[in-house]
Length: 263
Image 1 (cartoon, rainbow, N blue to C red):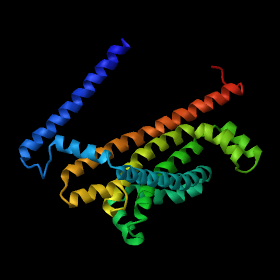
Image 2: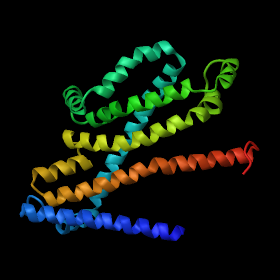
Image 3: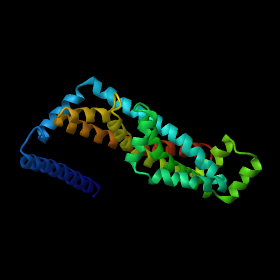
Image 4: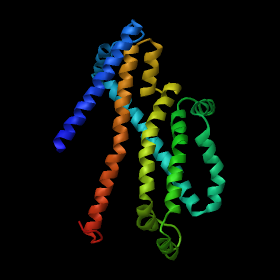
């Protein structure tokens, strides 16, 4: 039964891919110009050529490093503000208009403003961080607000906030909120970052390669880099689930070894 379900999913997936390629060929036949809209075959050849070039992997790694730096910055700022806002209601009221403005302002406006103020090099980091900080902020704030009030008494008895309180009380109960924020931030972050790289023409980036190919009318390379970007996004979006699974497994083992959990 299980095997038949898996086979059915594979058949449906392959059918979806084949239909997508067929639609691309139909569009090519309608356009009738290989320069404007290259065939899937030519795009695939350009994709294979890029995969055989070592510089492609350096570019992908550079974009990934920018993503990691952006996530670290966003979690430090958003996490700390969220923890404090969850603890102090006055601060939450003060920060609410700021977070509303950041969430509401159009991305294009943010990109233009940041580029004018900070230039092209630093803009992708700031642009992506501004998109992620409100998500992370809300997750940490809601995690604190929804803490078990009985255990909050332990926090008060233990004294002021410290790492022990965070590790033993706050993090375990706030983990579902933080986990959701982590998954959402990685998925959104990589898409916004590539867009910012494209507009800012950031050196050694997937976004810049897309822009360069488009400016040089190398549309086969545009499709090839788009395909690389799609695979990159899919892989990066899968990483949070993988990381969270490892964390949950290690936590479960720790609890089993400490006698707090029976397998």
